[in-house]
Image (cartoon, rainbow, N blue to C red; front, side, top):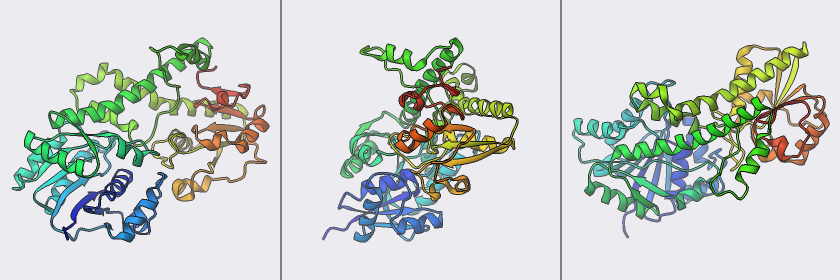
Length: 430
């Protein structure tokens, strides 16, 4: 019987766990996940990822039962042929040591990589980081380890599907190394597109997200222009995009989540300092970030005019609605809520989102309400365009409060529901 090869995934978050689920489809490998958070380890061992991703929990549970996956907060094996680094990184202004921590992690696990083994970096990194990892390995006499950059590129909610379908960008230091890395990834069921060097692969990953973020930034600026001219952005986009091949302008709205909110900053951090002053990408990112502050100002101004302690209901907390996710990191709703709490205003906050569990909400679960049938808040903030905000329950709630509550809608939900825009702030429609 042929010996099963061992693969190590460092990081048991979204990127690592979805990758692990993909890799267990191969009968040639045993996949180990290294996760330093002991609570998360226990959850994963119980087959509970707490990530809303179709078929993810079932795939993890099946692999655990079959013995093709192990999860631990420490390493017992000493000779992994392939290691995938899947730890989260942050923009340097918020975490100056983020890239240094990733490099230290690579060095730490190097002692568990077999001779001539492969180290695949999946995390989003500043341009030049992979080559620094390679140089650091040479300094500790592990120049035999082949360093690859193969960035994670999936969207939350469709990750397992995209891991099967999307080509993997792959880069290495030499043509010989990249042919070996390509064979490894293809054996794991990936299609591969090779980059000429490590830096262009790192750059390409960052640019893909920065470009997407900036397209939303342009839409948001257009919506602000519509506000200034007292025109309708929804009508204008319909006229522009309808059967017109040179215009595919996305709808305006908040841009959050763990990737788009940081990747432009990481890209800019990779560039000369004077690049920042004229960067369209950075200006788009800042415009998107400022939507939270604009919403806060609208809410606080209205609350002040009420001259009383006001109730605000935030409907929808995840950072996006479609595809569905339970990820609230850097979400528009959470950012606005945190700013409301920091302002120490007279607002009484409630949260309604039947698509999320208390675990998803974490400490914010104390603000949760589950029944809105008889609730009449002073202010309603539509937090995302998730399915719950298009449900019959929410439509009845809005219909009952349409004239009494002040509605703040940056997502165009009220437009989609054909509700009259009579009392509130409707982004791009005022």
